[in-house]
Length: 77
Image 1 (cartoon, rainbow, N blue to C red):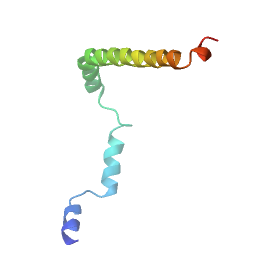
Image 2: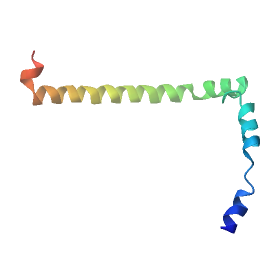
Image 3: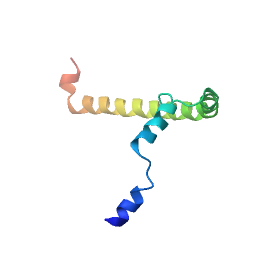
Image 4: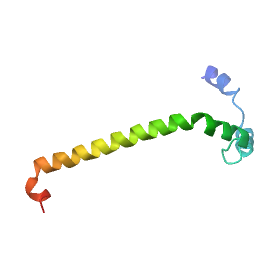
């Protein structure tokens, strides 16, 4: 038990943690850092978004095809 309390003595108190969160301005970075993040990662995010969208459409259509095969009488209405 004593060793555990020694480890926790290095943890800052909740007031200093609250002050650090207040500095973050609602969890936003500086505008320069956000602009750099947007500029550097936009191609990767577009590529991942396209792949995810195509995978989602494919899976959705496979469920539609399975429904047609399993229950043709209901799907023909």
